[in-house]
Image 1 (cartoon, rainbow, N blue to C red):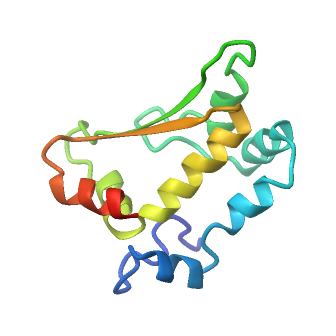
Image 2 (image 1 turned 180 degrees about the vertical axis):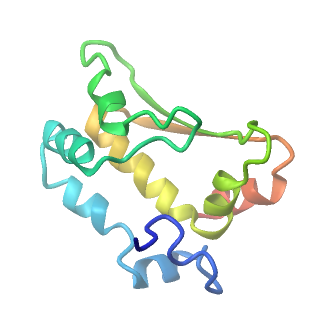
Amino acid sequence: MDPILTKHVREPNSFTLDFYLQHNGYEALKKALTLKPDQIIEMVKASGLRGRGGAGFPTGMKWQFVDKKIEPRYIACNADESEPGTFKDHLLMERNPHLLIEGCAVGCYAIGARVAYIYIRGEFFHVQRILERA
């Protein structure tokens, strides 16, 4: 199986916008904006994409459960890594922050949210700076 989320994490400058754009970055967002939100949710459900927490809950189902009548809506990305021995979120935020941002943007469009929040551990100062620059 080819890695998707971690494909470029070992490459230098993988955290930069230039690198991300050179490797088809933000193409998923461009495509998503040509679709209806319900189409995106169905595609995500069909893909089998799951949360990276302990439960591995299907992302498409999470998005489908959002009540469209309630405003405002938000995306909350929990990158806390409070589970013992985990280091999965830190790696992505540090080495491929634009992938995380693009995923949040697609999710926002799919559920009709205008804002996304990324929650990170307070001691991840350098990761916070990387995300802010991205």
